[in-house]
Amino acid sequence: MRLSDFDYQLPKELIAQYPLKERDKARLLVLERTSGNIRHCIFKEITDYLKKGDLLIINDTKVIHSRLRGQRVTGGKVEVLLLRRKKGLIFEALIRPARIKPQEKIVFDGGKIWATVIADGQILFDSPDVSTIYNLSSLPLPPYIKREPEELDEIYYQTVYAKREGAIAAPTAGLHFSESLIEKIKSEGINIASVTLHISYSTFKPVKVEDVTQHKMTAEYFEIPQETIVALSETQQAKARIFSVGTTSMRALETYAQQGRIQGYTDLYIYPGYNFKLVDCLLTNFHLPRTSLFILVCAFAGRDLIMKAYQEAIDKKYRFYSYGDAMLIL
Image (cartoon, rainbow, N blue to C red; front, side):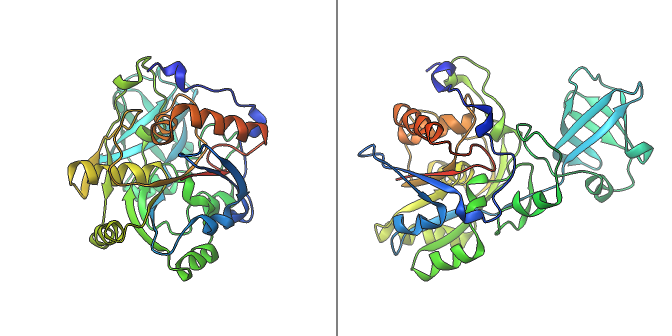
């Protein structure tokens, strides 16, 4: 499998720059794997495709402020994305421009905070505490959203059920659920349980190797609570369906199914040929080409069918990526 097999062309005007005011009024493309049929509806109509006893698995991670803009001592602009706190005031980070070398200093907020690049991808702050660093950081909107974060993003770039801080990107399939829609789902006898996977750079970084089977994911923290394990078992015993809300929920669930682990770090990389062991249906947004997310979706539904669905979404002018529309794969 070559990386070029997972490429497609998207008109720039279809990349959503703002969220919809009413989350559950996004469009929903419904794709049936067995028949290849495609249907179009509004997201709040997702209940038409759910049955009593089905189980939705959501990712309850919460996006943290993790983007800092600063300057080099020479005056050049610098952008830092905090990936993970290692210890003390040392963080793993993406630093742009990449030509910044170890021991170089970066100043933030007019000198309120200084930091030193101590190694490739690591930065040491001189702030008195971690909270000061995060308080000076902004919400890390994806780079294809060509604007600065606004007040509305504080609400809309989080799921309504986000509660466990630690992600640097939102689990975007869940952004479409409103509180009222969740209540409706529960009232119809459809179960909801949660996992946590703190989304880091590994989830959305581009695949750069031409042989996609050689791509390596870096580890991300996940946790599956005991009540979710029970819900999964009961759903399987009842021969009902397990729906993964998002690719990150999928990776947590399949890590558990494959390895028996319910907590820790996962570097599970799913590409065509993978044998799905737990998930029956997938709710997902439309993903960038040449990414592990897009490759995972192709693994779940078949590359040709996904290419067909994406082309139809483009033809019908669906909104793409984080603030875009959704696809339900049955």
